[in-house]
Figure (cartoon, rainbow over the protein chains, first blue to last red):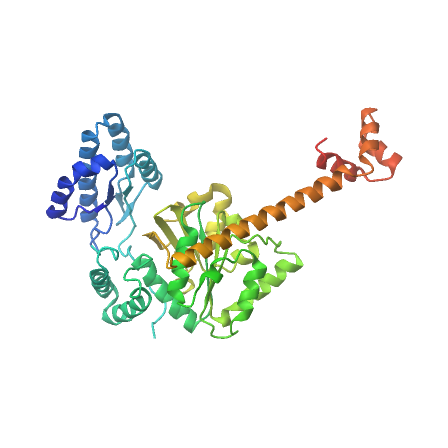
Length: 127
Length: 313
């Protein structure tokens, strides 16, 4: 089951099915594909909302001990703006993924860096 | 946000079309979606990330115009190398079949390569964890390098799957145009050389891999263009083909075990039966040095050391 936090209807769907997800103890969150070319702000906002949802889920699952560790890793792994590009601590991000996987929370947070980050540029004409 | 093809294939195609049109214009989007549909319409879903597919269409035209492209797919066991390879190589060449998904030696790979026209073949072929590790300076290694040096004209999509970059024979590594690393099931990172833009990443990856292993793929994430993508579950084969594929894989594994056992048995017999061993041990017990033993029984000190170490003495 995949959720994105792009708009409110997704958020509503998230809350509605939260009980079901908690029963399954499995959640898949996709927090990529939010960048608008030339601006990284939407991506950061998306990440913040994703984290908010994750924290809510953990509280309801009574995983209080893990929240601190996740918070630390989250803060380390969030992208930092540097000279018009984003720097991501991929090691912390991987640790975050591993920790969540151990808890049976399947999450997918991906960052690609730079403005043209969703595709590799074509190198030849297609004819 | 692009709809998943497994949720709604037609909507997925529309979303993908708009994404590509927005970024690369209508002409490229039209051509891409035609290519994409010709591969996935019959399944009513896609089997590779559309961004990887976009790069692969570019590779298709590269092969058509310039010549053979050669990719490596690396990652530890269970990360989905074979799954990705099957889907990717089918995307590039729809005649790709189960027989080509089970090539495990460089020699079989060369045999298969020889079956296709030597110019303009436009076929895809890869080797899955090849066991042929010819040294780059050996006669075999040089011959393989010779073939690789000339395969451009054959216009093929070639690949090699490996758990460890060091498992890729050096002669072949030097010919790679790109590399896909699968860190865990579901995700991948793609790097490739872009000589047109003076971006040569392959050498840097290989050099640093020795020191830091797979972390090298993250080291260059800000330096060289790369694509981080998702991989899909499932392969293009139907159930029967999948059964056959698994059977061939199991048979191949069994063959490898037998070969390994044969070599081990042969070696153990060889050294246990060494006629000098008993005498060497006797003299060694008396406190004689290798040089003194060597003079007595007429074999070099190096050979004595070899016999002893092979017999774990």
